[in-house]
Amino acid sequence: MTITQPDLSVFETLESEVRSYCRGWPTVFDRAQGSRMYDEDGHAYLDFFAGAGSLNYGHNNPVLKRALIDYLSRDGVTHGLDMSTTAKRSFLQTFQDLVLRPRDLPYKVMFPGPTGTNAVESALKLARKVKGREAIVSFTNAFHGMSLGSLAVTGNAFKRAGAGIPLVHGTPMPFDNYFDGTVPDFLWFERLLEDQGSGLNKPAAVIVETVQGEGGINVARPEWLRALKELCERQDMLLIVDDIQMGCGRTGAFFSFEESGITPDIVTVSKSISGYGLPMSLCLFRPELDVWEPGEHNGTFRGNNPAFVTATAALETYWTDGSAMEKQTRTRGEQVEQALISITEENLADVKEYRGRGLVWGLEFHAKDRAARVARRAFELGLLIETSGPESEVVKLLPALTITPDELDEGLSILARAVRETA
Image 1 (cartoon, rainbow, N blue to C red):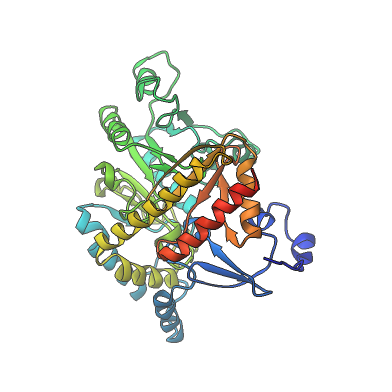
Image 2: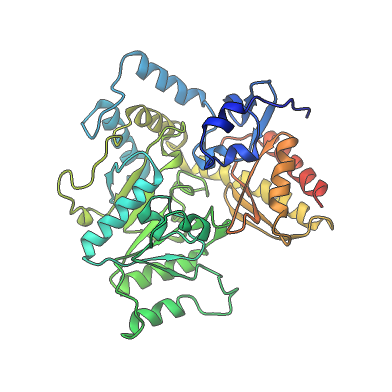
């Protein structure tokens, strides 16, 4: 692909140095449809990032776009705080009918604010209020958000350092397979809980991702998650599952914890819940945990009604028959896995490991800088992929769930070429 130098001057002179994604993809995007983005010069890019998992149904999904345009054209309420609106009522009813009831989940629904970290902050605050304790246990290589409470339970040293103050009341424990199977699950955790001299304050809750996205696509086994849930019950701790990136069908089932058979006490959801990339998040919890006083946790942008509209349309379109959506995602995932096996078997690949579930996959190389070089070459070839892991050592594949088999093959072929050409 021949790319002319785009005019990035206003971004470079006026926008903060904190910007990141645009550095890996140095062009000016203009429009997007389905699994493709187009820059202002008309170059097409196949998108294997999907808005960091916010676009599970692709860019400008036509069904969702139609619902949104119709709502806006009739002057539907845009901003609603936590007022009752027709858009919110439709979403709540649809979410109950298509997601909660079929899975026998009893959750109350809270709208804590527009972003994932808002959902995590509300979950931590609620757990502490319910249990009357401050400590929260998280896991190595976890990522839960960039606000202070979420950062306190995030593992990445670079992101934690950005806080500028001590991050307290969070204690990390080893994630599944952290010791490569040489140490029994939860040996250290349970020993600390039972030892009065350990220095670990009794936690209010444990927060976990079933697949650590930013941490390097680390997949927890179902039996590990079940053992964690049992440990929480024995030790009177709440279990919070952060399903912000892995929920809404990313791993196959609507919630990523369904495969393990557990029912978390609290679940955080964001990213693709609106379906259209509009800001929206949920905090779900068992009814007996609903001890909030009115207004005790609030926010100006809790009631993003256009997001309620597209969320309802997404649920009705893709989750009325959830089993079909789940089957399609798993089939696409098998297609990705076969391609990663082929890449791994090439002598030049130098792949350390590939891993994933559903339509989230990671490719880790022995050379720590290789993933960034692969992502850079993939961009030059017309594919958008990102890296993850504590040292950005993993290529992260996060295509839309609606991607076609042909588009998936096309992107995987570009990935294989980028791996070969960076050897």
